Length: 264
Image 1 (cartoon, helix red, strand yellow):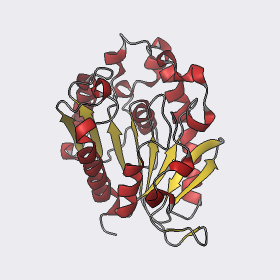
Image 2 (cartoon, rainbow, N blue to C red):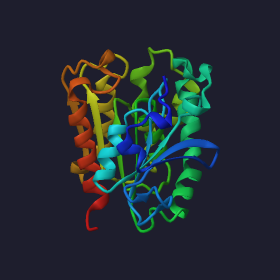
Image 3 (cartoon, one colour):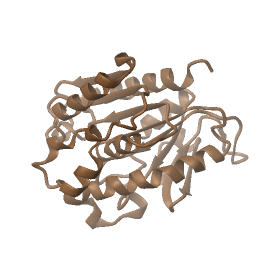
């Protein structure tokens, strides 16, 4: 079930705002330099645009946003179409996953422009990422011209042929969007994929295939990284990283700090 904004941990609430961004998309903003007393941001910070997985909401996993804020990185967490504050039960059906992914990817350019124009990230780098379906939306977006300097995806896949046995299979959308087949406009940026070796819903082999495709075309293959955990105890070895969750958050934070804060 979605977690209400006011039930977030106080350490996150102190830095957080709930807003509607272009497209009337609900967003949770967490900024390391937000002054709650005045309601303003005192100085800019890099920002991660983050998208959750199917059936949950942007308030999930506040520990991620707190770690990033403590590292000096802001978060803009978005509700996927049909999720969270824009709940639509039918869009949470696995068979409509790719519809939600495509809609979310199409909404991102206006949100990116809004973040850039806000002044809260002036002169700072932007990153994109997501978990599961949110990560799929991020990888679709990265196959088009974009402003991002890094990408982090978790329990997701950029090679959709590995999903063809699942209810989400939509041949027309797969042909139109499958990232592994649309890398012509992919611009080299540091990329980290975190996964579970035993993921029952998104096979690790599909993400490995995608990572291999990125490395094959990268000027510096070392900027494309992947880490897969052994048994974690997470539900279906997919919903988070179970006993490895803290390590995954730390890895993601360290990766983004390296990519976004270098030279600042």
